[in-house]
Image (cartoon, rainbow, N blue to C red; front, side):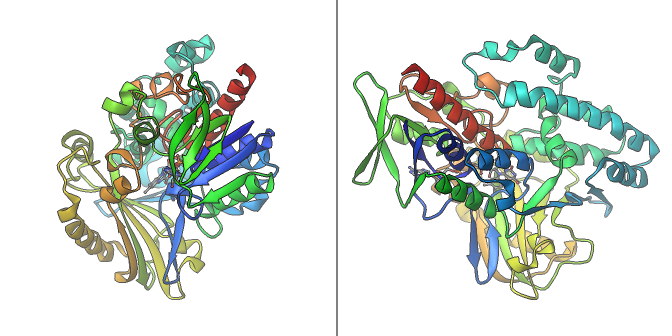
Length: 488
Ligand SMILES: Cc1cc2nc3c(=O)[nH]c(=O)nc-3n(C[C@H](O)[C@H](O)[C@H](O)COP(=O)(O)OP(=O)(O)OC[C@H]3O[C@@H](n4cnc5c(N)ncnc54)[C@H](O)[C@@H]3O)c2cc1C
């Protein structure tokens, strides 16, 4: 079939790799001048800034897309980061998230005591069981109805036995006494747009993916991932058109998709995979189709301010590639972000310093910093036209006391207004939060029944937000295209 993929972000690239590998004639239309979408990198004054994701997990999912298109992971050299994270706490203490079971158990024994170290074994066994049952049965799965949840009664019973529908905060407290470990092993719920205390234990799989399976960093930075996927898809015969903004769909009599409109061109298609943010797809490409309720009235994830800094000098000894500075007022911060939608009273921040692993990402004698503070999305009262300046000053003031260089020679400051300008609903790049009512069969489907042949991929649809999930979404979209092809 002729398949048009709208968008060359990670979801679109993965869909393209799987589709072209299955023999479809694939054209990718991307409005920007290069691939990557949220996961693209830019170079400024000799500094490489990764603009979106920096924590890469589950490389086997990229491998599956590369292999589908006849390439391999050898085309994407990367290293495992050990430690995956440095957790820095307000009392001045630190815990490293080490790669490898024995190394992490030893770190816990040293920092938190023998009891928590012994319980780490049970904790990992629980996480692994959760991951094994969720990945095959619920994450890497297309749904046609909520009954999909019980299509494997054994899997459903396993979830119940693992208390996966209980709350994450109390579940992790069952294993550890040290509150610092609670934070280190539950903050990942924020990746799913949820407060760690009340997120479902289901989302402990994210902790499994980063803290147990490990965090990776591609040579040259995160931009190497879309570049490798694009090379693979192109190598297998996919066509890429950049600077091509899709403004509409064309349909056959009866409603099935017939092509897309991009500028003066109509590109014919038997099926279309649309990957821009889902609310924007409905708003701009499907003005006559009512979006699913969750798209209209759903709970959207918090957003983030990211300050990309090219700085003269090096960070203090002990600084790692990923450094999480945990604020003290933990629950209050999540209440602010997701309740009153105001700034965190005592912010937790991620500082990624890729030059700790790859000095070539900055000129000699300089460092590249990525400073991320979670902030509310634009449904709240914060006015970024006034708040951006003070926020930059606060982040600058935070650098020196935490051992980071402060002489800024290049920078890029990104607020929720920028995410909104890039076409992300409510100014969040993290889409609908993963509440139970917005997960699995309850998340907006990746097919629109009123427009046969139109398939969605990306973080607004199944399985959800983050690099691993959108890579899976690209493959699930390819499966939907094949299903449609068989039915036509
Ligand atoms: C600051 C930040 C930090 C993050 N951190 C992490 C992390 O550490 N780990 C992790 O796993 N995930 C992280 N994420 C999430 C992850 O980056 C995203 O979930 C993922 O990259 C989204 O990919 P996508 O392909 O679905 O969407 P996108 O990357 O947005 O791709 C959509 C593409 O469609 C194009 N497009 C839009 N409209 C049109 C149109 N009309 N015509 C043609 N093309 C169009 C866009 O230009 C874009 O290239 C982060 C995201 C951000 C922004």
